[in-house]
Length: 294
Image 1 (cartoon, rainbow, N blue to C red):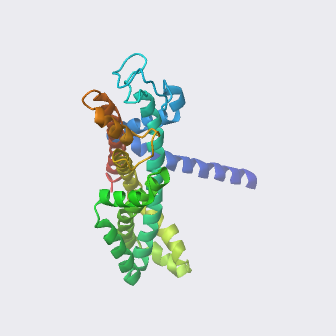
Image 2: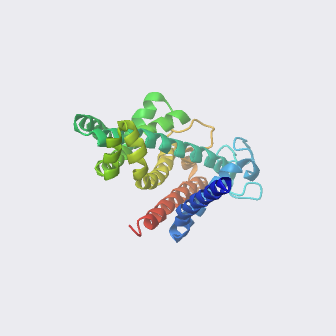
Image 3: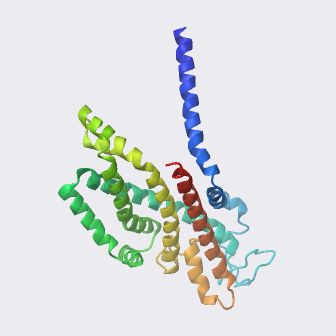
C-alpha cells in the first residue's frame, strides 16, 4: 500500500513538472511575433547543423575561372573575388556566428550577473566601487572599445568572445543590480537570513531565480547585438582571420567589387539582418506574453 502510494505520488509530481514545463514553453506559441522570430532562428540553426549536407561546395575551394560570377546552376548565389562559392560560405558562416554569439552572451551574462548581484546585495561602498568602474567602461563608445581590445590582443575567435564579454557585462550588471535592489527587501529573503543562509546562497538561490525572467529576455536581445558586433568586427578586419567563413568578413571582401558583383555584399548582409530580426522578434514576443498578465 505504501509502495503504491509512493509510486502514485511520484507520478503525480512528475506530471506536475511536465505541466509546468509545457506551460512555460506554450507562452511562445501564444505570440505570433515570437513564433515568426523563432522560425527564423530555427532555420539558421538547422542550416548550421546540416552545413556539410547543404553546402554544394567547400567554403575554401577557389576557382580562378569563376571569379565574381553571378548566380548560375553551379553556384546558386554566385562566387566571390577568389572564385569561392558564396552559398557555401554563407552556410558555413552561420556556424561561426551561431557559436560565437551565444558563447559571448553567456560569458557576459555570467560576469555581469555576478557583479550585479554583489553590488545590489551588499550595497554601500562595494556597490559604489563596482558601479563606478562599470560606468567608466560604459562611457566609452561600444565600437571604440571593440577596436581597442581587438587591436591590443589581436583578431581571433577567442578574442572576439573576450571583447564582447567585456563590453556587454556592464549593461547586464546594471540590470541585475536594479532587480537585486528590489528583490533583496522581499519577505522570503528576510526568512532566508533568519534561517542562517549564507550571503552567496541567498544571492544565487533566492534572488537570482526571481530575476531570471527579465534577464533571459535581455540575454536573447543581446545575442542579436553580439551578432551585429561579430559582423562589424569582421567588416573592419578585426574578426576571425581569413579564410574562415565570416559574414562580416565576406561583406568587407566583397565591398571592393560592389560595382561588378553587388550580390557578394547583399547575401551576407541579408543573412545577418534576418538572424538579428528573428532573435529580436522572438525576444519581443516572449516579453509581450510574459508581461501581459502581470
